[in-house]
Image (tube, helix red, strand yellow):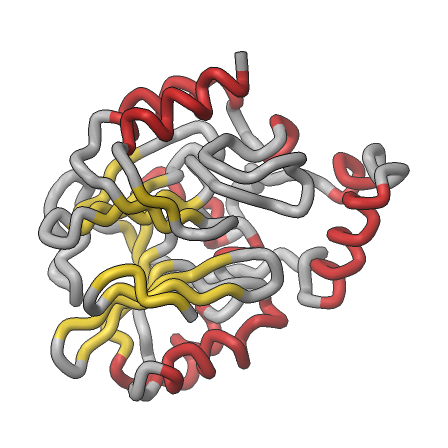
Length: 244
């Protein structure tokens, strides 16, 4: 667990992050790890002195298996809603699949880093396709009525409905996989995009970097890698240079 700023926490599971936003005794969970990370998600809630019942909603940056693993457990046990961009709901309900395939990974498994990572995520449920039938759409572009008052920003590319969540009062942006700072398959750390085969539309992901760079925030909590600090415009410019 990292406390990024007051009432904003980042937790790490199987090479993936989720975040907790606190407002009094209420929480917002942003993303939910792999299916095998359910226990770790619950432990992270307990680590800051809360119960799963305190989670008023789960915001999903995008509906890949490593970000939705605890959705069904929280909904079935506690009635917790899951909200995402309207363009992402079909990915969560299983009507659409915009993600890397096992074949994409297998073609790269000759690299030791890919093999180690694929074995780890397989143990965490990475080959599953969780279906969150209860997924709901939030209203894009307006502050959400959830703890932390996050403001969604649509960043298509990684998936059609990929989104970041801005916390204006805290100067924090939760970027999901639209911008990361590390991953087992990346050669270095720092602001960058994931390898191209992870993205549904790489050109759109590049374009979304410019939109993200215009956000007023100086702390980044990514879906993969450590939290970063500094002007977001510089971070996205660095990511764009690495692509070039």
